Image (cartoon, rainbow, N blue to C red; front, top):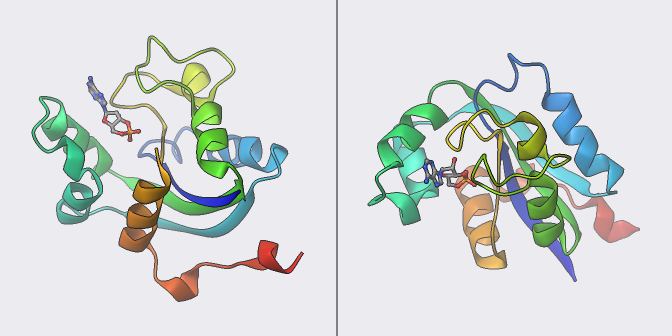
Length: 144
Ligand code: CMP
């Protein structure tokens, strides 16, 4: 079924000049970019976004990294978009991310793993709501 996913290109990726490369991989799969904006995430927003990790040992590092610079946030749609995008991203852990996936090709550590994408329809809805107002999300795909 048609799904929408929340995607974030993490800090440092604009400086590395690989934002286009990452967007391009989603376009090659004919996924629909329904919204995008460049922002800096506040610690408060980061805590909401990553609420399931607040008790983890890596949370402090995750928070300081994610708030350290500009990010690109997107709503991306398509048939089974959530699974499709997770597979484009590759595994979370840097040592498990297969070559050919975004993280496999560009992640430098598990913290600096280039990209975040929603892991379920429920988290997609929650994350999209956290970062976007309804008016910011286009639905051109629905007209085709
Ligand atoms: P992301 O998909 O954004 O979701 C949670 C993030 O926490 C994850 O990517 C990693 O960047 C980070 N993360 C998950 N597990 C670990 C870990 N074991 N050590 C450090 N960071 C982690």
